[in-house]
Structure formats: structure tokens, C-alpha cells
Image (tube, rainbow, N blue to C red):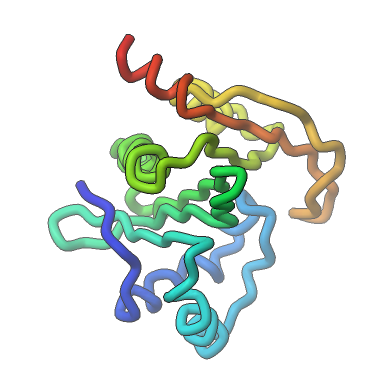
Length: 169
């Protein structure tokens, strides 16, 4: 399994993910995006220094995406997001791709902190992030609206020194 830069030919896969309600509700996003809109966003952001978008690939098959967004080079931090297509779930792709995304943020971009937002009720995801070294820094009350209700979200973060210590231990 590897991650590689998102290419234009990957947009069909991304479009499918972005229009799947069960997936986008985890990202607190509306599953509504035309292919034309996605292509325009790709063209607009492909040269942006504030994000890195990767596809997760195994033996030539695209199974998911990992994104580093809102990259801030002054404060040296970014948000990480990950989606593994449901048909590829339970095979360890999320754990490995997440690890590769965090490693890229700290080693290649030399960031100080990686953070994320997660539904406070998504205990499985919270557990995965905690195992990766992320710490709950706060709870945002009724911060996102999905599935017809307002949801609390945890703001979780990992500092580079914590990541290095975990890697050494």
C-alpha cells in the first residue's frame, strides 16, 4: 500500500466518495458535488501550497484518499482528513494511510502539529486516532450538522515531539 499525489484521472473515484452520504457525514459535509465542480476545484487547488491531496493505492487499485489541508507555514500546522472507500474497509488501509499522511506532514513539510475533527460519537475513529498518538484537545458542542441533527466534535491534535517520542518508543 502506498500514497501518491492526487491526479486528474483520480477524480472519478473522488466524485463517487464525495457523493456518498455515509462517507461524507463523517466529514460533516453535504454529499452534493457535480463532477464539473470537482474538476474546477482540482484545477484551482492543484498548485496550492496550503494543501496536499493523496490517493491511497494498493497494487494499482485506488482505495481511498488522505488530505493535508489548511497547511499553515507560519504556525506549522495542518488538518488531516482520510477516507477509505467502504468496500475496502477493515483491511488496515486507514491505519497505514493515516500513518503515512502524518509522517509526510512531520518529515517532509516539517510541521509542528497535525490536527483533525471527529464526531464525538464515533468511538471507533476516536480510538484509532488516540492509538496514533492524537489527544483530545477539546469538544466543540453542536458544531456540525449531519443526519438531521447537530453533532459534537472532538478537536484532536498531535505534536511532532509526541510523534517522535511514540516512534522511538
